[in-house]
Length: 304
Image (tube, rainbow, N blue to C red; front, side, top):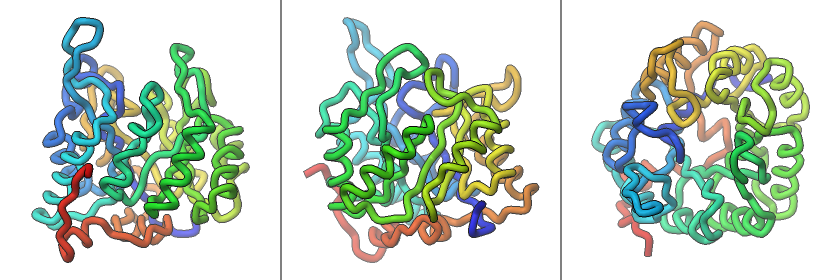
C-alpha cells in the first residue's frame, strides 16, 4: 500500500507507435510535445513520459511522425519543455524513453548524458510485443543502461510487463548499485505479457521489493480497470496518455489532457491528494530538479 496519500499522475504523451490515423491529437513535433506536456502538467500530471518522432523515409515511402531515438529531437523537446515550464511557472519531471529495440545500444542511451533528465524508462526484459515483433532488451544493453543511470544520477522507471521482470529489474539494481528504493511501472495488457486483470495486478503488487514504489497503466481496453484496481491497491502513481490508450469512452477518441483530467478526478474520488512535481521527487527519491537548475543556473543543453 502507498506510504503517502499523494498520488503521482504521469502523462505518456505519444509513445513510439500511436499514429494520427487512430489518435488525431497525438503530438509529433517537439513543439506539440512540449505544449501538451505543459497542458498536462497544469491539469495535475507531475511527470511527462517522452518519446520523439521524426519524418523518415521507410521502404521508399515518407512516414510522418515515425518513431525515433534522434538525440537532436530529444534535445529540442527537453529544451522546449524546460523553457515553457519556466515561462509558464509550471514544474514537471521529465521522463525520457530508452525504448528503441531496433536501434544500436548507444542510440538508445546517448540522450541521457546529453540532457541529464531526472528520469528515464528501463525495460528489464525482452518480450514478443503483442505477439507481433521482438521488443529486444539484451543484457548487454541493460548493463550499459544501468551504468549510465548511475553515472548521470537518472532515476530509472522499471517497466514491468510480467512477473519475472521484477526479479530482472532488481538484478540490475543490485549489480550496479542503482539507488533504492526502486520505482516499478506496471504495464498491464500488452499481448504476449501479463493480461490486465485486477487479479494479476494484485499478484504483481504482492511481489514488490520491500520499500519500492509503483505505478500502473492499462493498455487499451484494460485502461480504466487498471486505474481503478491500482487505486484500490494503494498505488503510488497512475500512468495515462495516448501512448497507452486512445479512447476516452467507447468510440470516443481521447486527448492527453482528457486522460490526465480523468485520472485526477478518479484519484480525488478515491481520497488521494494529487502530487506536485516536487512531491513526486520526494516520493521517488529524486534529488535533482532540472527545471529549477535551468532557471537559477542557465545551461545550454546540447547533444555535444
